[in-house]
Each structure stands twice: as C-alpha cells, then as structure tokens.
Length: 344
Image: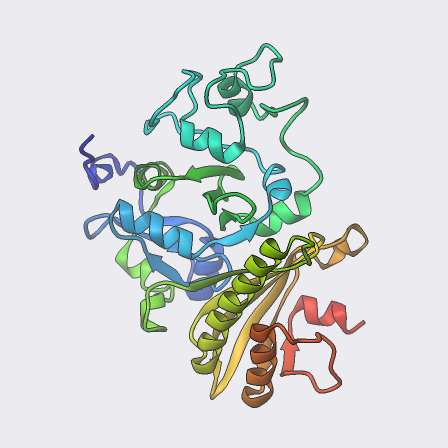
C-alpha cells in the first residue's frame, strides 16, 4: 500500500501557541512529538532525559530514530503500562480477525491465530482497548507505577523480546507500538503538537551538539551467569560489544547510552549528555530497583568524570573485569537528587 508520508500536514488541527522560554519550554515538552507548522510540518522528538530535540524525518527515519533513542525495559515492567490503540489506521496483517495486528500481538505475546487468547469470553482487542490483560485476569496496570512515572515520554525497547519499540505517550500514559514505519507515522499524526519556529528554536537541537542527529544507543549488558555455555558465550559477546560501543563514545564525550541489568533485579542507565572541558558528563539513574530501594526511582544525577580514571573504569567495564568497588572513583563529582540520596 502506497503511503502518503506527509498527508498529516493536511490535518494539522493543532493551534501553535507561544509557550514558555528555553529550559522551561523543553522541560514542559519533554517526551512530546512536535510539528513545525511554519515549515512543512517537519517532526521532532523532545528527548525526556537531555531535553534536546531530534529530527524524525520520513516514516522510515522516524522509526529508526525512535528506536535509537530508546531505553531498554524488561517484559514484566512493560506489562505494567497500559497499551494504547490508534484507530486510524495502520492495522497490518490480522490472522485471527480480532482487530489487533499480528506484529502487535507478537509483541504482547497473545495468539495471532486465536481472537480470545486467554479464553475468558472477551476478544484480545476488547481487553487491550479497555486496559485489561488479554492473557489473564484483571487490569494491565500492576506494581510498577514508580517506574512508569519515571519512564513516561520515553521510547521503550523490549530487551527480553526482539527489541520491539513502544512510544510511552505522556498525554495519556499509554504505550503505543512502533513496529513499522506506518505505525510511527500514525503516532506522529495523532500526538504531534504544532509549534512555531521561534518556540522550536528555544529547544536545543541535537544536531548542533553532536556529529550525529541520534543518541547512540549502545544496548544492554546483562550481569547474569548462565550454566549453559553457549548462552554464557552470547552474553559475554554482547557485553564486549555494548561496553566497547560506550567506551568509544566516552573517549570523545559523544552522546551515547548504555544500560546495565544486574541479575534481573536492578537496571541502571549511563547516558553521556555532554562535556565540561575535556571531562565527560554522564547522567545516571535507575529504571528498576529491588523492592526495598524504591526510593531511588525517579531520581537522577549528573556525574563529571575524570578522563583518565573514567577511561580506565569503562575499559574495565567493557572487558568484563570491573569490580564496581573502588576507593578512587572514576568521577570527580556527582550532582542531583540521586547523588544526594546515595550520600546519606
């Protein structure tokens, strides 16, 4: 089916209004998709972590950019976030005729050949649309609400599945599937906010800060040990790849992100956001903690790293020889709510 990539320009019913200034504006629009109404409706995404805007381009580039900007989330946490459905209208193949496209059903693990996957008398579409679990009893929102509030506005990647991407819409706090370029286009059409050139210029353009228009998403290191030798080799290979990717970016303080998952109970993000002279500044925060450490959620800190000690630290991390304990930390200072909490 031929897609009219920019037909959404014809339905810009949003009134572009003057907003706040500079940092306040970026913070207000964190996680939003913006449409440049005084140009050709070019689409931008305001990253909720560094508050910079990223150009999305045509639908294929939209999907690729969104995936690169994503943060990894495990399946259990993702299940706590309600699924949003856009009625107009990319559906794709729907083998069981239940109203959910096959690629969406694969992502949420419902049966693509069975309209009512859990056999409770309600088809999968009806349950998903109304916020119920299509694979069991009750609502889809569970115990991860602190995590949900922290991740809102992000692009979420299913690290335990096939890397499927979701847009966690800050308007209704539901997640929308990003399986194909057409789905990315529908999200832009439905949730894009019109903005004037003058207001858009108040939000830092990522392309003026880095050589690339995208944050490099190096991936996820799984800090677990597998008894199966083949699985352990795969984990080790991925560790080296992800760690090496982040180390390369650290050498020049180029924006990049890496996630460390520790034995399924802790998830920690390193996000290079810039530099202070020749010293890299890294935003760090948790996206998953153990039950007794929930007060760490929703807090972050910006750490300024000593270049020599930082290189040694991330080299050891990339090689899998890091001990995570040292009397001589790699960073020179850390500022923010998380730093204050950890110093108590």
